[in-house]
Length: 60
Image: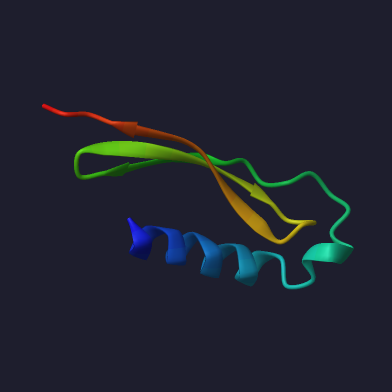
């Protein structure tokens, strides 16, 4: 999961180098499937953050 989070941060940096100057709509978040569950994230460019909105653990 940590590797996927690092990938998301790198992608956000590549698309929005000057985050605090960003005036457009934030990119759409998404779901990431990981072993044992998933998490939902939201990118907020202006604050230069990626927020984990929900973590779902599936104990099968």
